[in-house]
Image 1 (tube, helix red, strand yellow):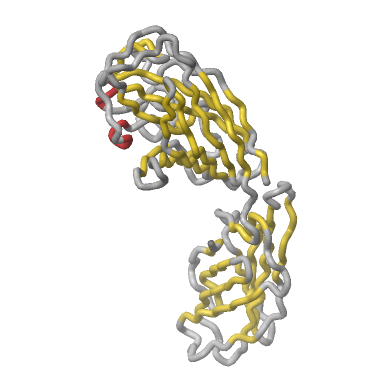
Image 2 (spheres, rainbow, N blue to C red; image 1 turned 60 degrees about the horizontal axis):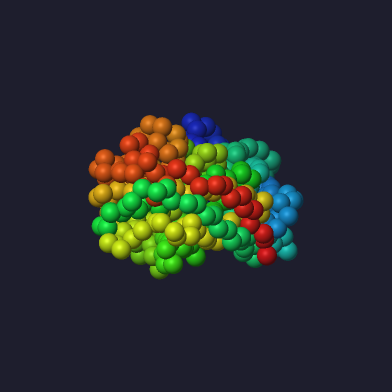
Length: 347
């Protein structure tokens, strides 16, 4: 991954720098500038200064990882006649300043000088968005969890569907974002172990609302992919399972259903609080994109009013009936289980 910074174009003047770009990698990078109306009789020097700050993913400590301020080298203007536009490209290595951690460019400035000296400042846009992950992969932070909840006494007819749906809220998301996953998820119901689709939730500083899509080909049972702003929501959709009820199903004298899984985070210090519900539908679908579960409570990209995360914002919404942990009516997700708090440990 590269970090990219750019200086916007400005009106051309005599001997003027008109644009500037820097591409920063873990072991080096490049700077390219555009200039107009340069004097072909002069030799020009390009002097960049780039400061990069990195965060240790294991400890969260911030350090200034590298400052590039090399000895200037002469750059030829080539066939420039003094009236056209000339571009200069400068590439550099780390010279021992290998980056490590999750890094961001703090400042990127440069000047163009000639002999005799003439200075033309070049200022890159700040702050530069995006991050650069260098060195070893961030630590794997994982935790297993399980939550049980009793069904109510309402009978569930065979061929109806139980919509199991889970949501969570997160704290400790760093300003650069994080990725939370929920894998190896199963529901234990009436002696059966039901596999549940995986979940990947990406918290991004560039996202303003919550959205969810389902990829049936990602993972052994498909994966729900959700994007979220850094602030998330009090309910972020996690994952769900549509279970078609067999004709022999009964919830009487059965152990409470238990939902288990493994949370992971690519950033240390992230905590989750999660819970689940189960609503019964007389008609439903295992095409989860058609089900269209609401990605968040009050902060979703699609209209959902005050609906809870996991509500099927589709035609199936009208087929909800009582049963499982729900009472029908407008209880489209079922009533919530107790809450489990999880902070993945980093290894």
